Image 1 (cartoon, rainbow, N blue to C red):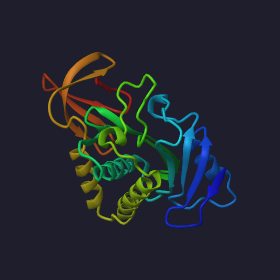
Image 2 (tube, one colour):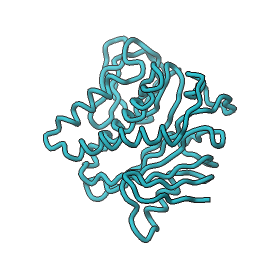
Image 3 (cartoon, rainbow, N blue to C red):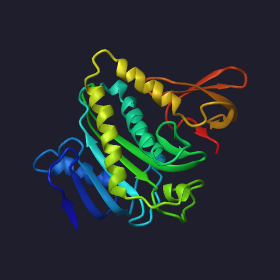
Image 4 (tube, rainbow, N blue to C red):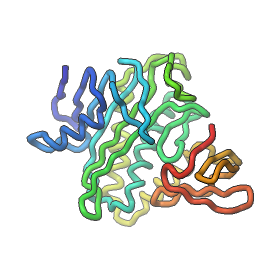
Length: 257
């Protein structure tokens, strides 16, 4: 059963089940008689083929977690600056989780971790219009109340496992959307770039394994390095034990957990 709630700041489409909320919302944007409003959000109690980064699937027990996708139309953001969307979405999730527990960080580019365990994953899909971003659909899977994970994923954790409490998915979703709205609207009116610069600083301060040497792996094998920087285009900069700076785009380097 699908329920399209009354128009509001955040119009919500509630699904009992779908293959992917990102796919559903993409189809809605492509084929609806009227373009869905910005912040339209599709939620599902269960996804049969939830999509993650690197083509991974997302394990989620029906009704136990928060699974959703939201659409934005950031035509004021140039394609070359699209990483700022990943930054504000990651920060909005992190800061919502910060209200419930400590130890939350952002694992580049946009996984959310509690210490060494993954609590949230996301997939951000942009459609370009010329040199700008015409549409952004962000899909998020946040582990709320699930206590047993059966997939081969090495390090999942839920908020309930951390705190011992149950969480109401619509309440957490509403908190995230309000945080996203605050970031996004400030970015929309950021004429001098100062707010974007502050986002970059907040993102850098929130990064997983921000201090110290850790193992990574690239096409040439494993190495030890410390986090040096994340560039405006999202390029990940590591400094290895020899002092050499290594720069990577998404999928070119992996954390060793």
